[in-house]
Every structure is written in C-alpha cells, then in structure tokens.
Length: 552
Image 1 (cartoon, rainbow, N blue to C red):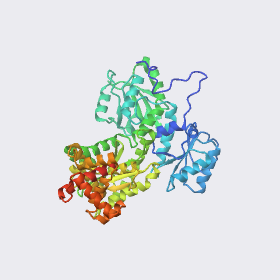
Image 2 (image 1 turned 90 degrees about the vertical axis):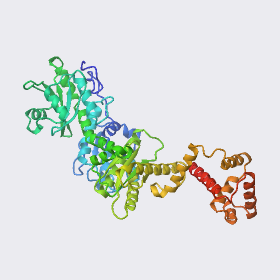
Image 3 (image 1 turned 45 degrees about the vertical axis):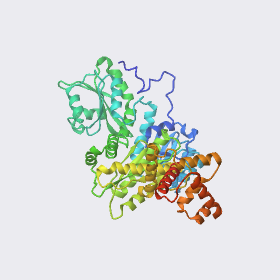
Image 4 (image 1 turned 180 degrees about the vertical axis):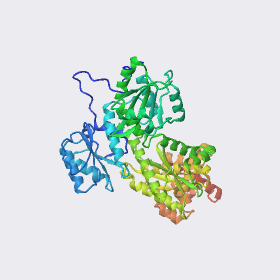
C-alpha cells in the first residue's frame, strides 16, 4: 500500500499558498471528552479558533492570549481573581476559560460567561489539572492533524492498525514502563521473534529505562529508524508526548528502504493524534473501565458466572449488595450532549460512592449508570437512600435535565443481583413514566417505596398477556361509559375504594347519597354484578387498579 493513499489519519501536505485548516473550540471540546460542561454554548464561541493552551497566573503579564484556552487553576466563582480573569480573557480575545465550580451554581457561571461574552467550560471539581492541560494541548494538535476515520478515541488497537496501514509495517504502541497498549493485526505484514514475544506477553523484554534504543527514541525530536539487532528487523519509532509529558512510543517494523522515508514522515504527522488516543486510553473509557463494565454486566445478567465476576472485581458481598440505577430524563438520546451527560453522571456516581464506601463498582451500560452499593451498618437502606439523594442533589452540575435514580432490594448473595437490578430498573422506569405523564412525584426512590404498585403492574401485565380479562364486567362497563357517557366505572371505583360506604362515596363523587344508591343499584342490575361476592370484588378491584396504574 502506498503511503499517500490513506489520508484519513493525517492531513495532506498543504499546497503552496494554502492555509492549514482552522481548529475551532467545538473541535477541541469534542476531542478532549473530559466531562467538561459548556456554561454558555453559542455558535459564536463554539466556532472561535483555538491556537494553544495557557495556564492562568494573575501575576503574569499577558503578551499573547488571542485564541487560547485558559485554564483557571485556583480561581473560584465570586473571587476577585475570577472576575479579573474573565474580564482580561474577554478583552484579549481568548477562546475559552476552563474553571471548576467549587460549589458555584451552573446558573451563576452561565451568567458570568454571558456577561463577558466568553466561552466558559466547567470541569469536575475532582478533575486533575495536569491531565486537563495535557488533554487540552493534545486536542488542539489532534484537531489540527485531523482524526482517524472510524477509530474511537482511546482504542489503541484500532489506532495501531491504522498506523500499520499508513506506514506499511506492523505497529506496536508501548507505554513508558514497557507495557504493550495496542498492536496491529493486519494480515501479511512481516514480524520478527521480538515482536511475536512482546505481543504475546504484552510487555517489552527489557524495560525502556534500561534499553538504549528506547532512550535514543525518547531523546529524538521526531520519528527515527532503529537498526536491527542480531536476527531481528529494523524499526521506525516515535516518542509520543502531550504537554511535555512522555506518554509512550510507537514502533513500526521497517517497511524497507523504498518506503522508509515516507513512513517516517507519516509517523511524525501521527504524533498529535497518537498523544490524544493515548491520553484517552488512560481516561474513563480505557480497557480497564470497559473490563469493569463487562464484569458488572456479568454480575447482573449472567448468574452462572456471577461468582467469577465478583472475584475479579474483588467484591465483598458478605453483608449483601444492592443495585442502584441512574438515568437522565432527556427528551432525546444518542446525541453528543446526552452521551456526555451520561459520562459525567458515571463520574459523579463513582465519586460519591468512593467517598461513602471507600470503593466504587459502577458502570455505564446502555443509557443507564449502575452502581453496586454495599449493605453496611444497622440501617443500610437509609444509607442507600441518602446516597441517591446526594447524587441527585449534585446532578445539576452535570446536566440541565433531571436525574432519576432508584435502588433495588438487597441481594444476600451475588447470584441474587439480577433480581436487585430488575427491581431498580422497574422502579426507575416507573418514576420516569410518571414524570413523562406530568405526574408530580419523587426523582429518587428505593424499590420498597413503590413495591406494591410495581407488583400490581406485573399482575396487570400477566392478566393482559394471558387474555384473562376477556370481555369481563370491566370491559363491558368501559364500553357502556364510552357509548352513553355514563359514570359507572367511577361509581364502581368509588364503591371499592370506600368499601361500599354510601356517604363516603357521595363525598368522593360530589353527588347526593340517594344518587349513589341509585347508581350502585343500576350498576349491579345492568351488568349482573354481585357486589357481595368477595372474590368478585377482588377481581374487579385488581382489574381497575392495574388498569389505572398502567395509565399513569
């Protein structure tokens, strides 16, 4: 394959007189994927060009701030430094300012951003500034270098395949301590014994700190050729950095003299993208996080293998566990904003659970964030309720849409976790359904708070699925009411709710006692209903109650 054909991973060289494509703030935000909340997104500030990243120091004289993303370390809303920063940034044509909320409301930060006509990005309070700097700088370079078509950020195996395709040689990606983070699997590319061993063990045979070849690559300003040793093959190699931090290196089997120079140039151009992918591989979407999600899914979906997954996670299930489910009530799903909200939610759930339990087993599965809550102390359900209430209280910092959360019952054994998950999901869906129908109700709940209506809904579904209702009295009454605009169903509902108390029925229906007696008599006569039969009353009550619940 000729190196000029796949232009998706790197930009084509600019023609004389042509300008390189401009990096926009929206491009950087998308590539950073660092749980940032944009306080005031507008087409103008999202389209602002970005040239670099600047750490803020109130004592510095700003010589060139145009089009830079400014990271406001140590500044909090309401402080003199904060107001001065936004004023200076706006007057200096900065691209954006990244801040931490530190207790400030999103509405306050949004108002400050609008007042200064400046893009303000809010990072989680627990975010590491060093990582944010590296991500921001890598995103600027990565956006300028274009992106790899079809390769998800952080998927180093897919990126290695793309690199191998571009450079015509088998690729390996290595971290600074010698671990193999990803390697190419394209067929037909030659490899040697060293490459075979390292991909099998996922580890270099000699640690980079003690290997002269690695030292030479790290010291070089760009991609270099490393000569072959013994019976091995030569390599092309590149040190990958972001913001001065060494992230690792890329090693390519030498494609031969005719293609070597073009492959070295291609490897150099991949540097910004490689840094971006390696940074994301260390973030919440890395292999470890995906493996954690897979194990949690096994716990909740695959009872025969649940004990194995629990052992892999190091779960302590001695006192039981409960599954908590969290969802954001958005009108649409699948958009970039909804996906980001879910990842922010995962970060929030993980943080709160770590604070409470000194450990966290949480994962994003589909559009729901799940957490396994230990059942400790004398009142574990009170703790569970407090945890979801606390997460809901902080949810305004991650999304403008409401958070809905629930906790299933306590599973005494790991094998019982699927039941706890089912209870959590049914409770959460019930809360979401009520909200969608405009019914005022809580945003968070334990399963037992709605256990009775949820169980009745199951009974109603069983009746419907098995055709048990047929053309019974309830169906006939509904048809009569619809046809003749009568109120028999309301009369029956009031009769069952008050145990046949005429005065209570009259008050509920807002009619005279004699009217109630007349309606009850006509109800029993027209539909041949024996209201003195307890089994008949139970059946009618079940049918009415389950129908009403399903309509809520």
